[in-house]
Length: 296
Image (cartoon, rainbow, N blue to C red; front, side, top):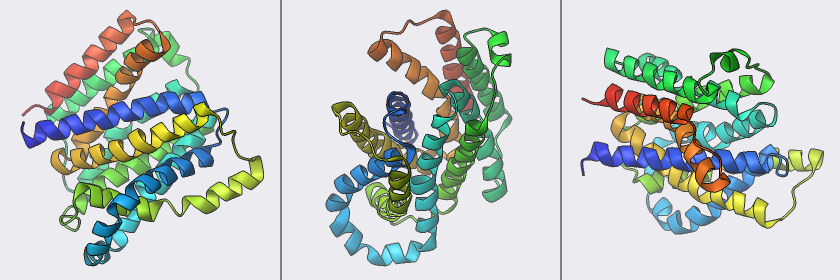
């Protein structure tokens, strides 16, 4: 299998994991506060990953010092800030609005890539992205443009837009600083980001805990947090970083359009929801736009 095909599979795993995370976040929104969700997600990932990577981190300490402030910026953007903003947005907006705002990620990445990397999308990239966006809008609206026009946006949507810009900047900087991170293995890079990005979440979580309290230690809550720690954090971030490294931030961002398709499939399999013609048409447009826009 070629490196590009392998990277695409890693991106697919990342998007699938985040689609499951959307279902978990929706299920736990009323029982686990936002900063508690963000902190324990990454604390769980920290407890799993750091003991396994402690020795490689120590051996490569000179490499860590060389990357220096770039690792700090990436960790604050990708680990500390993104998920915290997203979970706060989910409190005051709908899942449909989050998906809609999320469609701006490829646009943000294309603009940031042009500005920071001097990499502008080709006409085929833009047309493929447009088809994927059309399919996504069809999926969200269930084929009814009146339903799409009736959507309202609020403060949570502005927070989601901020989260999209944060993730776009993280992805582009990951590509821009690739030469400075060249000596890192994929797991070493992820371990370094988790090691740096998790501690800043602790004071924010303690402040939230004093303000609104904690959460019940139920099987559902603990199981949901465990899923986000393993799949939505460790495997998904590893897959995303690999995809960005090989395919570039722009191509990785367009894969984001697959998230509602995978979410719909998971909802059918896990929640017994019905698959409609809107899912088939919208999902087909997204898949074709991805394939056609990114093929060489």
